[in-house]
Image (tube, rainbow, N blue to C red; front, side, top):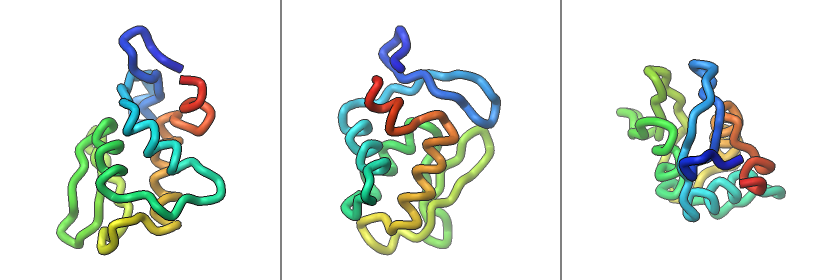
Length: 110
């Protein structure tokens, strides 16, 4: 659902508060690919990192994993040795987005 400022209203799971995240067309397309069924195998890391940056600070760990930090909590999504996400990484990113209330249904409703 869209908020008055043009962003999507989602839930911040760490604080339990509703917040507004602005997703441009590119971010929405990436999110739709992540929630696609059957699983999309052509999702690139740079697109996902751009989407995750809307939620927190995205960085590469010293072990070569992509991670996002939101309010001091860090979630790692695994190795970035390939350009595309693995099936496990897609599922991890999906779960992260769902924890903020972003689902296939909220994307189509927006």
